[in-house]
Each structure stands twice: as structure tokens, then as C-alpha cells.
Length: 221
Image 1 (cartoon, one colour):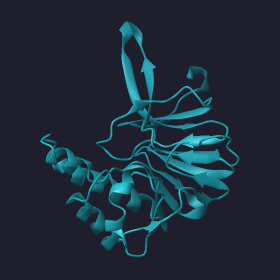
Image 2 (cartoon, helix red, strand yellow):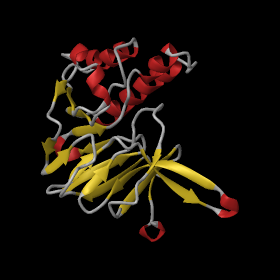
Image 3 (spheres, one colour):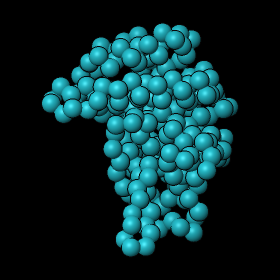
Image 4 (cartoon, helix red, strand yellow):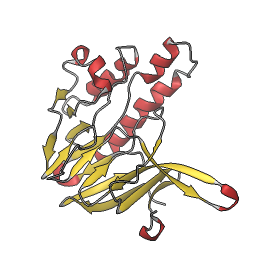
């Protein structure tokens, strides 16, 4: 498998990355969804002993994907933050310091409401729907008729593969229907949820430690 795959959707050229990020080369824009910065410390605060190294690994992953694509614009597609302000946010500030000219945009998600005011200056806040390349980017899935190709996060989608002896493997994924796309969670400590059956998915890209793979349409349930 490869570390990235090129894909044409919504009238635009996409590069889907095995990290869970995607890149729009025509707009030099890197997009990630559901990073959930601060989640590790949030759990530790409530007595769940998640290793603090997990927080550093999250930011290392972000730094790596920025270096890979060298974007001019970084779009966080909601749930950049998980909860109240904690020391993990200082790590994100380091990314801003290292990349002072990088335009960082936040399309707000439901979790971001806890900490937006404390992060002024770190990013530019967009409306709930951000328009780019004739497409709509938002955190929550669209409600009602979709007029323009729309990309969202929120679901932390995964797709289950079944084998003999009732073996089951569930992998994070990108999924695209004719006019709706959903991104996987970028954060390493976010969990996964089964991809809903609707809308009718036409393309699913599975993510694993080995890379990214386009699921053959014949295997789509």
C-alpha cells in the first residue's frame, strides 16, 4: 500500500494521506479533522492514566504532515480542541511558532466551543461552513439537501472488513458519495465509529499502519 493516493472529487484534485489528512494542491491547503488537542490531559485530570507521551505523538504527527506537504493554508475541520484549556495547548502553540507564515483556519466543531476564546491569535475562525474550490467544508454532516459538494468530519469513521472464522478488522477511512465526503479523525487518541450506511458511498479509502488503500467497489456493502 501507498502513503498517499490521488483522487478527483467535487471538481477538484485531492491527495489523500494515510495519516488521515488530505491535501488540495491547487489551493496549497492541508485539511485535518477531529484532532482533539487536550484530550489526553483531560482524561488524566479525571484519573485515567493515559501516557503523556500520547499528546506529544499527536503534535509530532501534525508536524510531520505539514513538512510533507508544505502547505500555505492549514484547515482544521472542527474539534481541533477537546475540552477546557490545558498544557497540551502549549504544544500546538509551538507549531504556530515554527510556522509563523502558515495560515491556520478553524472551522468550528462542537468540542471547540469549550476553548475558542482562549486561543485567539493561534488561528482564524471561519463560519460554520467554509467555501473553497466550489466545495463546502464543515464539521457536522449536512442536514437537508446538499447543493454543493460537502466535506465534513465529526463521525471518526471506520469501515469493517470481515474474514473467515468471524474475524473482523475495523479501519479508519475516508468515504465519498456523489456529493458528500467524510474525513477520518486525525488525532491518535480519538476512537472510531462504524461508517453509516447512508449516503450511498461510492469510494472508501482505508487507513492502516501499512498505508492507504482504495477499497474495490465490488466489496462495498
